[in-house]
Image (tube, rainbow, N blue to C red; front, side, top):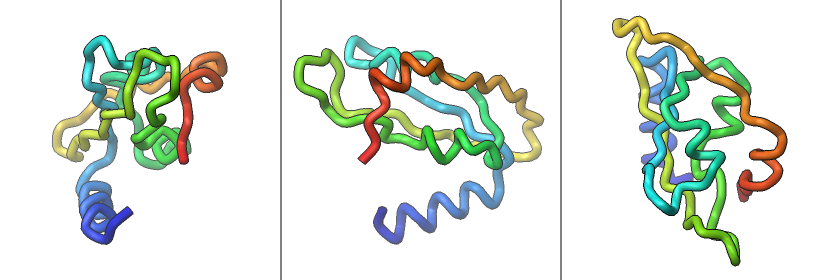
Length: 99
């Protein structure tokens, strides 16, 4: 992670209390990213770090490309509703490929 990205992430985390997983929804989106799309998580949940994109890179024979997902941060003033659900082990085993 380059310095700019690290500083930006730290700034976002300082002013937000939750993050929303955002997937680019098209024919290249993997089932794991589809499942996580629009899920809201608290920043102190261990899944926040674990599922910080990119979740995978292009895998031969699969119909999806490099992960194009990202977090959007929700400020304390917006009173967000947390709806995070941990993905199934099957989805994680099949699609989760962090470097």
